[in-house]
Structures are given as structure tokens and as C-alpha cells.
Image (cartoon, rainbow over all chains, first blue to last red; front, side, top):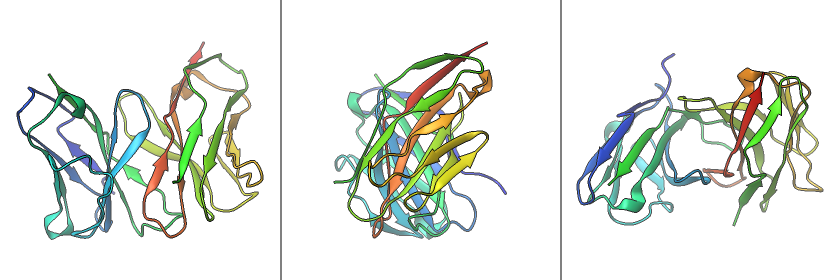
Length: 115
Length: 112
């Protein structure tokens, strides 16, 4: 089966610009998660979709971040306008049932650099 | 809230050395515990997991035992290889919740 894919792998933008990250989960995985790792620190939760619905968006930093999952398939994460502190690696992950014993399947991440 | 603390890296070892990466957690309830590994240029992948106290997860020569009394899940390997060089993340997923919480990661370098 195809794994979780993320696009682009790298993005360099200037402060104030807009960037959209895309994630295609494993087919059939209803649960989709966005995480971010900044400057070698812990991987922080951003939000969780179950199909097309936002289950938990408590980790979204502010209203400059907008995530969507139309149709319950792929997801996008838009940052508008980008700030310097948004730089980091954004990971997408999916899982089949979302339960406590269910492991996450990760994409390779998008490295975002805001200059 | 729930949290995971793991030893800071980097950890540098010679090939065939014994590896321990410490991980402790804080959580209410009965979380599942995981170790994920990130090889250079790749995403995280599950290394092993344990879902209840005293369970031992194992994979590729790595082991970790769920110790509820010490709230720990230390990762061990008896003889590391150069190919084990990677970043290792300890994580938990608690009952009643839908998100996995990660530690800061520990980078391991293994020299030939």
C-alpha cells in the first residue's frame, strides 16, 4: 500500500507570504493528524481530523493556520501570513482507528523555512 | 497535562556497544507507550509499542518495558550497528484521547 505522502518536501518563503502544505494519507485511514517540530524540540500536535471533521484543533498556534480535509481524503494546511516562528518541519500522519493502541503512519514531512 | 521526557542527545556510541535511551512519562489513566524512529531523510516510523504495564515491546533487536511504578519506557539494544544511527522519539497515547504526545527526540550516532 502507498504510504503517507506530503508535498512539498521543502518550502522557503518570505515573511508575510502564504504557503499551503498538502498531505495524502494512507487510503482508508479516517484519522489524519498534523504535527510540527521546531528547532529540534518535541513534535507538537496541531490538529486531528476524523474523515472531514476536525476532532481536535487545540494545538493550532493561531488563526494564521487553516487546515482542511474536504471529502475526507487529502488534507491541506495553509499558513497565511507566514511569520519567522512558523519555520520547522510539518508532519502529517494517519491511522486506521485512532485508538490508544493504534500507531501513527507518518509522511516524510515538509521543511518550512520563513525568511 | 500528559507529557513525555527523554534524555537529551546526541548519544554517540561505537558499533556493538550497548544502548539505553531513557524515557519517562506523566499521564493520568493508562496510556499506550511507543518508540518511533526517524532515519535521515525519512518520516517517523513505529519501532515498538506496549499497551499495558509490564508489557515488553521489541523489534529489530530493540526492547522497551512498560514500567508503571517508575512511569518509564526506556529503550535498549544490546549491540548497536551503524545503521541504527537515527533520531528516536518516545511517545504516549492516553485513554480517552485521540492524540499521541511525543518527547523531544534523541539523536543517536553509531561509529564504525
